[in-house]
Length: 399
Ligand SMILES: *Cc1c(COP(=O)(O)O)cnc(C)c1O
Image 1 (cartoon, rainbow, N blue to C red):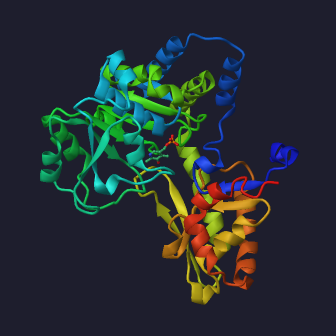
Image 2 (cartoon, rainbow, N blue to C red):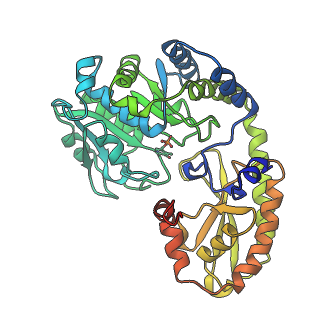
Image 3 (cartoon, protein in one colour):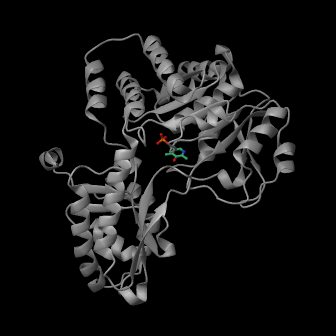
């Protein structure tokens, strides 16, 4: 299972945190691996390859057209750029410093989250500026209506567990208001299973990650109206050059899209459910630990095991238990971005055969270790700030 890790001296790990950039995105199926490997030894006309991708994307999303980008984040930047430049190479080349008069992107304030980098920065990279709508937990129709002006290039709607989940304008209403102002709606659906709903619901462009639920190599997917997709694609001769996607990612994304249609989603869910129940059984007898199966917050057909830790009864915090799991061999990497609320989650969507049992075994051992660990003030800090700390630590102590 870890032959490559062992050969290279890398730490063994089991990912129960979800599809994380910091852990290499997805693991891909054989068919996707074969598609990426096959094209590596060949030259190919990239426009033709992207036209093939467009057909595969259109087929699966119901959109008119599509293209593959380096990532969903790149897809957002290129889509926004395309909404500003249209099909005009001169304007493409003038970005980001000369975006023209229509250079504002409207976003509900509660949608201005981070996914490892700020949403706002993906907008600004194109040369656009962000025009926030409403307050964090209050966005009202009149606020969106008055934000849409002659300077508006696009309106961005973000679907994520990271956004504020109440007080936001519902997608349908958002589209209606933008439609009547003639402003294109771009949906960041990077981490969503539903490949059709946003386009069917009136999005002009919808953006997905190739390396999340689709199980492809690192890539982004833009789907939507043909003229806007063409305008986004044209950015490859401008700001898109620094976000270039390789032929292997395009071929892999096409293979992943084609496989998605054939995937036995019901069987996968049953397997994931069995893992959650196994882990819940391993934790249920432990004083102060309450495992609960919870649905995905954005309605993806996926559940996770939420491990609630009562610090007094258990003798250690959720953050300390997460640390104990992370220090095991193989490391069990949990979903801990809400750890200050006293829990972490276990995500079953990236398990290899045999790993569910290994996680159950590690949970049983980690609860014994964690309860005896010196409570460390730093655990909460580390769990909350681990993302940036790990970047800062990289090569910092190299000889
Ligand atoms: C993951 C994610 C992104 C970034 O996707 P990449 O393909 O990794 O760039 C953007 N938006 C949301 C909501 C995400 O979940």
